[in-house]
Image (tube, rainbow, N blue to C red; front, top):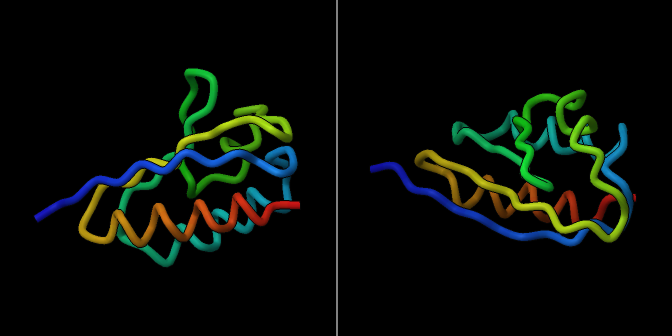
Length: 86
């Protein structure tokens, strides 16, 4: 059975190369399809370039959405990385 999970995250820093790369590394560990959403746009958590193209600045709220068997774990792991971004 597939599950879905969504977690809002307030970014402590802009979603630039370092946190985007960390998200990609974490996302690779899960089977779930993971997306990050900001301001009406969506990016795969498996693409640093697409994540950076969201243009999410420090203080912005993004939503981590995951679907798949390990969706809850995947969304939580990506959200934790984003919360610790610097």
